[in-house]
Length: 393
Image (tube, rainbow, N blue to C red; front, side, top):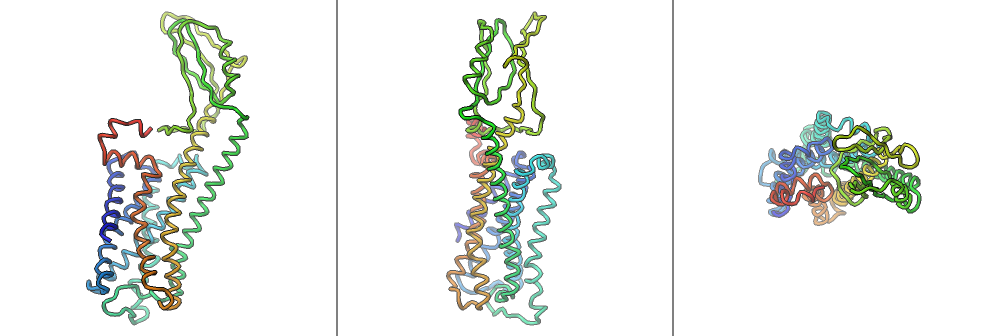
């Protein structure tokens, strides 16, 4: 239990500290991870420590007032954690399916903060008013002395409605977002494969010049044999300056690519370094080479990035489902039979799974998001980040 508290507090505190120290993390999507970390930090710093003496002794010794406060905070932060996962899923869904509008709002942190506040208000409204006012509405309390649980603990109707809002609807929603992202990526991958004939790959091209030159050019994926054939038709000269475009699939580049730019029309032009009064234009593929590299490169990079987003989101959602489903189902069943048909140890185990989720979430950030991994390494191993900066590229 103590290890769970330590892991939850340290892990989520590290996420918050990384967000404060590393300004590059302060994007709209990462604000929602910050919100999730705040909720999980409260779980480890407040909810679990107060519950440990209760579960060890079997008796609540902190009074009814603190019991109410503990219940409100516990239900609040757990529900806020769920709603934050929905918000993160929605943000990733928009970033993949509506990339243009998403990038236009990427720096608008005000909208992100408003969504974060809305999550906390909605989370409180699910259970907060019921916890505070249930015994006043019913004009009696069913809570025995020395115990601490909500007055609606055995009210099946209320728990069914609350569980639908807290778990079933969010879980179905995030599954929908994940499925939509998967289908979107699958469709784009299929279209990309149709546009490339078998055996096509990125090719590199070399140009030679008699004088020192500055050559800038782009190359779209093409058949290597054709590329070499066309390049060999250029006049061979003495000194060579070479620029190559290699495959990007296996590289993680820190680039911002605007895939919405119109197709670029590029000519290869050679300019002498000094004392030159002429400009020559080498024509590739007969006349002027019109390159569609803007869209090609942007789409490829974006597709690779979206695949990583989909994988990371799928992992977070699967962990969320595994941690929350047992408790939610057992809570409803237990309420229906007033606790007689569910073993206490089984219910208690499912209850702790909710808090385990709060300890796991910080681990998922560096595994699934390069930006958090970079920030964590800067905080924990600053020397390594300076010596090996290429590990983040």
